[in-house]
Amino acid sequence: MTDLQQIFDDSSNIVFFGGAGVSTESGIPDFRSKDGLYNQKYDYPPEIILSHSFFINNTKEFYRFYREKMLIDNVEPNAAHLKLAQAERKHKLSAIVTQNIDGLHQKAGSKTVYELHGSVHRNYCTKCGKFYGPEYIKTGGDIPLCECGGIIKPDVVLYEEGLDQNTVNAAVNAIACADTLIIAGTSLNVYPAAGLINYFTGRYTVLINRDETPFDGRADLVLHESIGKVLGEIEIK
Image (cartoon, rainbow, N blue to C red):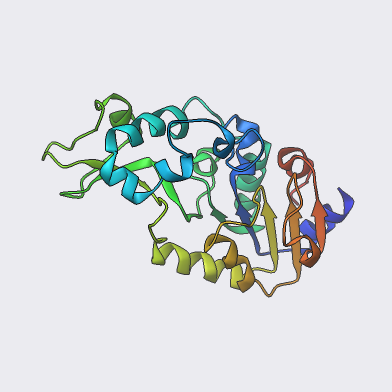
């Protein structure tokens, strides 16, 4: 890890861009690996279930899948989450841009986290806008309803929905100002999120992912290893 350690030592404004692979070591399944959600069998393909139109037209079935496969609790941050939180406290890391919706970065202690795809920890009434926590979703019947009678929707970005523009703008600004960009746990095949890395013009680009990605040839350092192991060995000075 000498090369990565040197990059950390030389950097003062790191931004971390992460995907599902960051949380697999905490026991949360990813999507596109051979064991991921997209390669499991359901009555409908997960990419159909996790769409806006399916939520509207098949809300009960959406929630059956969502509660079973997306609303995962009893998981803890792993070594990667904890190291990133430490790097932020030591003023080495300025922001985390994540495609994950599990909230584990915040649970590890990170403060500046831009959640491109939302969070399972926030849910809102589609009628009045009132917010509810995940516990209400778990126990709210086949289709959780607000006290006003409106249907509650998870504050996550479904297929056919756009990203929150304020979150995107903040993420782009953080990436554009960074001197080092660490990309980890993502196939870089999901757009528009993956396109945000193109705003980086800093010094070092590091890519940590189990499998090859379309970005491998552009990175200064590529590590096809465990994200938790790689980051866990870094000393934050």
